[in-house]
Length: 104
Image (tube, rainbow, N blue to C red; front, side, top):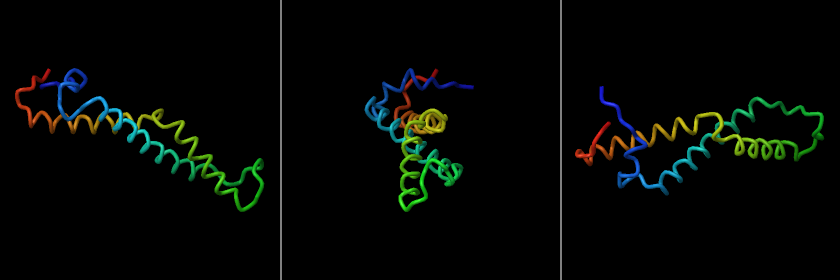
């Protein structure tokens, strides 16, 4: 079986530049933050004795969950999994365009 070392050849491919990889990582982290926010919205109950029962409570809770999800993004592994999947797909596409690229 042929193994493919992505890290070694990633910088050599024209479609996978460092800026593109940084932007992709930011987007996968943002996607993970959305997933975490949805989980927080569903799991954290609205009955909190520290928050008063007023019309702004739901807005505050949503903002709080959004901030927590942004801080937690990248820690659950969904972002890294998606990032690796997308870079491998891109690498496969580039390898098909550049058949002379060595595979290790």
